[in-house]
Image 1 (cartoon, rainbow, N blue to C red):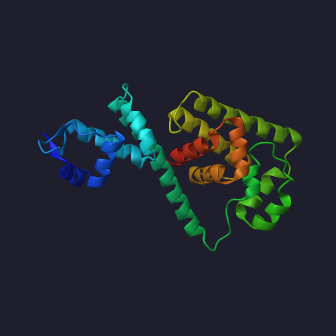
Image 2 (cartoon, rainbow, N blue to C red):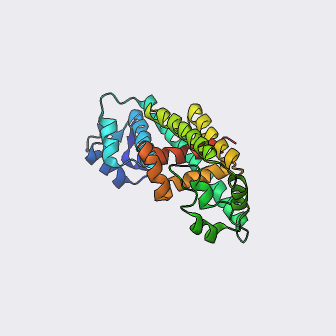
Length: 251
């Protein structure tokens, strides 16, 4: 069954001009033409159009899409699986961000529950005194600050060494999975991220999965966090942000 360009545009909620553009770029060429030269699209063309629109939705450029669909090895099922994984990660991240916004809205007018000191205590070559003045001025009156201060005030050098070692081992296990090409929402990654959350919970302050996802957002928004993870493995800051969001989304 053949469809005219107008019918396809209406069906796919795109403009006729967009379909013409896809044709000119070689992304989606109609399988047939009428005697008058008008474009006619087959069922296979519609399936390919769905792929193109999905790729656009997950943020690929038209040039990237053209390269993908023009590849002789293009496999529609594999493409759909990859798209589903990408959308699932995005969905988990959006859900975690919504939860974080809700929590922030609930906290308006109340003491802030996360402090920079608490965040930086777990990662990298942290010197507890380095941010002391900044932290004390900004967050000294919060419950989380007090809880972290209460726990850590008696930590010995050996305690800090153990904390750093445990955190490093967790980070390296996640980096190894990333290096193997394991997606950030894979069960193995979620289990490793859960260990990272439990590490914070054990040594510093109660840290829910939702709060951990909030930290994940800071891994890509605060240059100090980003630099720490990028030193372990390029792209790891975003990988951790996605993984903490996925971990929070599973409940």
